[in-house]
Length: 239
Image (cartoon, rainbow, N blue to C red; front, side):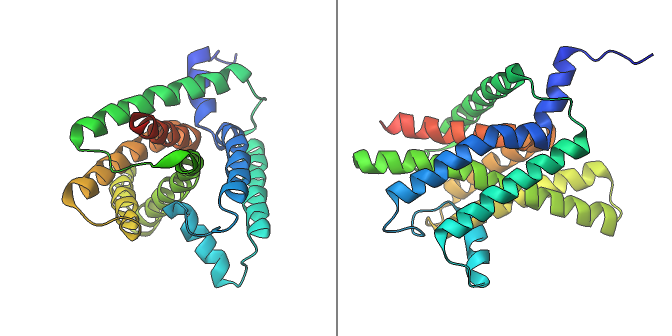
């Protein structure tokens, strides 16, 4: 007899999956890329988040510079991973209410992060003018998508594989080290776009640890939306 799983446990498991994560991320990815073409058509590479700069630098390294082709490749990769995740996880289908719950949950985690960071130090983001407001709304979305993809999903997964399979470390030690490494890498890459100050760097590390733990326990979709909500709250405070 199959043991019945409670709706809450089913939600926790499903919402953490790659399948659900990419389903909720894909609409925002489309919106973000369209926004980039409209808002930054004359400066396509200048105003980017650190995660996406890394991806686009990789494409530039292989002499692929057409922004439309790059965006198409990124969208295709997301869709391919979503389909692959669906098949591997053998998901029974989508529950629309789960997606709504994921958005609500992300709002809660994002609000907690915003309050915590506000108490920790001043948030280093200022906005000027209507055009800048629209641009920063778009960039806030991109930061959540790509920075969580690179600094959480990729870095944490890579460090865990190295420590567990290569150095035979325990799952707990590997996970803890991976989260700390990803947090410091996350903070360090922001130094390409902002001057170094101890409070701001420490704030980035603490925020990176928070998002890393959230990724480990709640998955990519929740961590990405939490990051986006956090960015929106920063923008809202300046308005």
